[in-house]
Length: 164
Image (cartoon, rainbow, N blue to C red; front, side, top):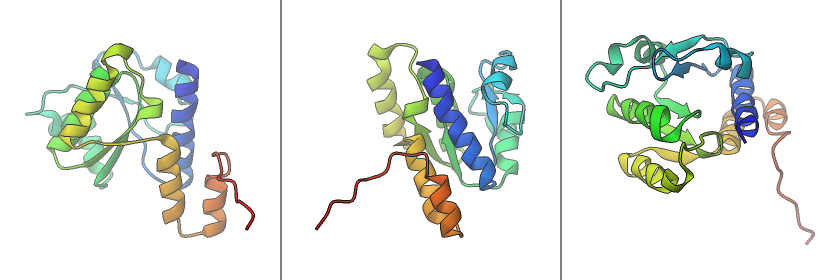
C-alpha cells in the first residue's frame, strides 16, 4: 500500500518539476528522519523541512517561511499521515490564507476506521479534497503548450470515446 501511495506522490513531484511548480517536503514531528523521504522522493529539489504545528507561530517557522517564499496561493498536500501531519499542515495553511488541497489517494490514515471523520473535519475546515490525477489534469489543462499538456496526462487513465 505505501509503495503505491509513494508512487502516486512521486508522479505529482515529477510533473510539478516538469512544469516548474515548487515542491516542499515537511517532516512531522520536526525531529523525523529525512532519509526515508530522500529515498521515496529522489527527484525532490528540497530537503525535508521540520514542521511544528503551533498555529500562532507556524507562519514564522522554517517550513512556513519556505511555503511563503514560493509566492503561491494554493497548496497541494499529500503524505503520511492523514490524522497527524497532513491535518496539521492543512489547518495551518488554511489559517494563513492558502487555498489548500489534500490528495486523498496519496494520503493514508493511521487508523482506517477514523479516516472518514478526519477527511470530514478537513473538508468542513475548508480543505478541498482531490486526487493526484485530478491535480495533474488541472495543471495540464492550464499549461501553455497543448502538446506538452498531453504528455503530462499520458500516464493517467483516459476516457473512452464512444462511437456515434
